[in-house]
Image (cartoon, rainbow, N blue to C red; front, side, top):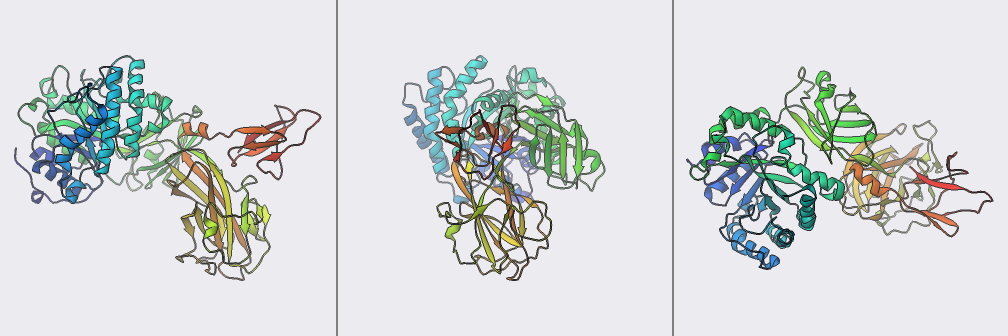
Length: 640
């Protein structure tokens, strides 16, 4: 096959195709592979780091900077169950991977995202017995850090089609044994891989759940047992047709292309799946029956036809309540396709059951509201949106708008009578220490939001009046409870501020409005004038720096000038998490002597004379809350 150089192509950096189909390069960088690489796909796989493979990676990254490159290094060597698995993992790095990877130039190293280890069962014990699988887990516990330390992401296991074998219970037992190494790979930024072949060559999910989409069984199990692994990245590093023969011996190109179109439509529904690299392109000898070179022009055109268009993409999907989902699109959609309920596909993450959308409402082009039958509590769902066209076109735009996990809001801080803010209105210079978690604000007065002074009627009441003054800067702090360790997601912030503010989370600035000074001093004035405060936001914030337990949210509000007639502050902070994670956030109410204490301060304490009510919120709450013995019984509960 001819070698294709970068000079033969004009490369334009572009986002990858919305299709998840791509190729596994083997032996050479063929002209068909070059066509596909410039279509461009989401991910490619190269076997080895010779000049042809690295040139393919260079071309791919030049045309598609967001694309991912997977690399595997071939070895004829084998390690057995009689050897120490930890030593075997180290040996695999030293004798197979390191010689091919560590001497690459820094620019070539940067091209490779994921590095695989042993292929299927070619080099190590795998799924033959419980002992073999435990051996393999230990092997990867030692190999994964070595890959990561060299600057790559580990992609573990390369599971051959139909494995792990056995009954559902046996499959799950095998997964249990490799969970430690999967978690380690996830921590290191990596994932795992499966070889996704259809042996029956069918489009029947009843069959394919055991073959090409067998991995869905694994993620269904994760959803029920290991929620932290439900978003573990998966790359289908081999795929296509196998069994009684490769695709070229089991029908014509049309049959294969039709199957690939169907398969692409399925794997697009799985947000954790980065894509499939069809085995193979470039080898015209021993693996030629699998060679996808004959369909390379079709595949390139298919990728382009499913390319990034002006069609809106799904940015966020939030479960507001059991029967309402709000979707945020990146661009305005037209009404005819944006309100077509058949374009919205909601499935349970644990078993794939589809939930029919009852109705769709489109507001301001980018805000979609789905009305649903009541969804199961604490249950994760995946939303897929297709065929929604941009506002500038008429009707549908065939293609994929995006897949995302449905998130649910977890209230952390509110503009209400539950969250209590400590505040400082002294007009003194507090420096920067007041923003941090260890600052002692016990001498500050406190109250519920809104806090401030204003004569106009606002959307929320002023629950804590602060005397009007000529102070330029006011300071606010509140603690909140974070119930997770290592939970990844987003925060959503809304606020009412008059005039400008800077917000801090555990001492770090996370958002500002109406203040341009850097750094911010107590004498700085706001850069905007607010007549009457209104709700602003929501604004999304990353929260990779939260810690389990108590965290501190803080803000400083600045006036436009010292003669301002009003100052208002209130902020509401929510976490957007998987619905299954909400169960972990439920507080524990404890009775200790003559007081009640609870773990999550974003909940309010209510009491009633009987279990049926009527319930009322207790005034002036503290945590712990002292209780007085009654002659009759009294009931207590927590509520947001």
